[in-house]
Length: 144
Image (cartoon, rainbow, N blue to C red):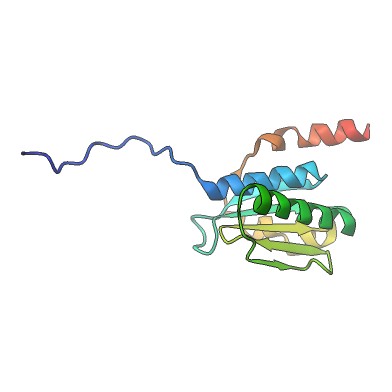
């Protein structure tokens, strides 16, 4: 049949992005555990090693551990992700959770300022996540 091999025009692709879903779940979990200054960086155009960075600050060793443990629980237990590695858990100044397509960085304030990943990867687009718009307001109302 003539024209049978022609491909149909394709509109915008609306497929899900599991890596983005995992990054946003990690960001929400950090927020739920009182993480501060949380951001999700889209790294897909900048490196082939991973798709997203999640960066958050914790104010104490206990809080960094709680964020790390709960992110593990959500990503592994609820979303079926397998963590490939973890670094810095004992020192608790910078905990890195590696899930392959998503890398999560949990910092204490001084270490985050020192390494300044947001500046190092300044060309990475920031991905808004629903809770990010209300996090500052929620923190103010919780303390005030």
